[in-house]
Image 1 (spheres, rainbow, N blue to C red):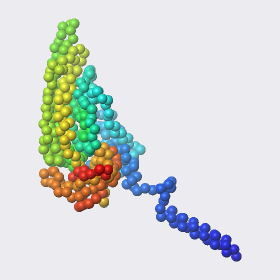
Image 2: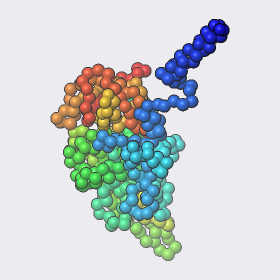
Image 3: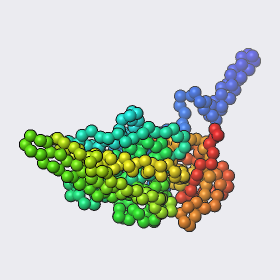
Image 4: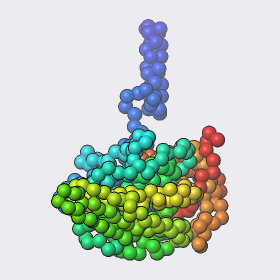
Length: 383
């Protein structure tokens, strides 16, 4: 009997068994077939998607394929994450692109412009450098008080205002007003109740909105002077814009702003003079409002809410777009009866940012957090 050969074969078999046991217990990082955890896989798939947490549920913002069928169809839909993950090939998500206008150009331009609108005034300034966290603000469509239904400027002015404030400040993040309207509609809350403290607090708890801006318009009113046959007609316009900035946490009014334009600054001749005069009136009036509004928004202290808790994981409806980084430490406060922050409960550390603006954290110290607890930035990992 060949004892040496038997020993060699036994050693080879034993070595193979050991290798099989090692591979069964752990798969090396370079191995081509490796199954990750479901949460990590989901985080990777949603990395470039806009994820919002509404009533403790995660939704992905996608284009509405029926948006072109009529005015009653919203441009975007919010699909539950599980449904999106199961049918993600059938949905198209809008990419988030931050506009970066060139220096010296005006960002106050109509989108889309009414027919015949001419050049706009330059009223903007470059953004200052800022490394903090952005506050979430929603601007409602401005109420046209005295114009016919076919001559509405409210949504157009709100869009112009958002673009200009976004150009001036790096401390504000605007929430989609259409999403807010759809949510309130699903709850049976009329838009006329937006100023009520209970509705403001609801927007704060669900979306993390810190401030709401309401606006009212009186005008624009146009004055036209008809010339002789050889002379062009002359038009001028005036408008009054009123704004109310409200704190959603406390329900209090933070600031009332109003402005109107000098009529002479809008004097225009030639073709489409009425339309051009109206746009000039809007631009001049907004130029007087944007500076004070931007300063008021910049002065707000940042905070957010806990949107959902699953086991040891704490979900926030704020993430990369807000400026949150992995490793950031947040202080957890119990909400006070007045809506402001109460006692300090503990701290959490941000472990993962997912989607465009959402994140997860774990308890670092203190009491177990609860949904709707208030979070404020304590320190950064690199500070």
